Image 1 (tube, rainbow, N blue to C red):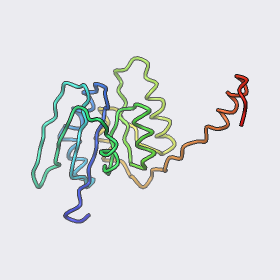
Image 2: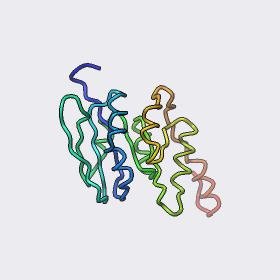
Image 3: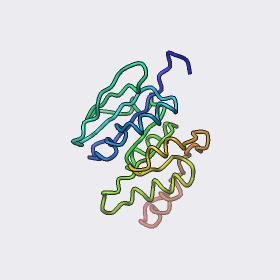
Amino acid sequence: MSDGEHRTVFVTVVTTCFDALVMVVDSPEVKKALLKKGYSNLLIQMGRGTYVPLKVSGDATLQVDHFTFSPSIADNMRTASLVISHAGSGSIFETLQLGKPLIVVVNEDLMDNHQSELAEELAERKHLFCARPQTLGETIRAMDLETLVPYQPGDARPVVTLINRFLGFPVD
């Protein structure tokens, strides 16, 4: 990595409130793990949460900034070297389609946590890393981006054809 190269970690909770994730990425443990992995900037999109991370700047530290909402986070995702996200399917698939390394952090406070099933399945297929707030530091320290397998979206046409036939619509 050259001196002028900045490697940014983008953290997103989109419109949700997931203070446990924002708090853990703001912790000294996680910041130290990110620095050791060569990341220089941490940008946190904190949504509706009430916890406000510390903005930090300086040569020997991770540069930290945050915001609540933006009309679009697509540019933040596109320019990130690593994305850390809540387990919403939209965030997961948008990040995977951009080909970005992804750590999904499951919100264990949700009642019917179908999101954990999706995140765990995609982690098992090696498309992303899956963590809980309390294991994020360990996940970052252990992650090897070379082990990730690019995500290839499936072809929905056979399913659409089957549904159209069932409903009596013309099939192309």
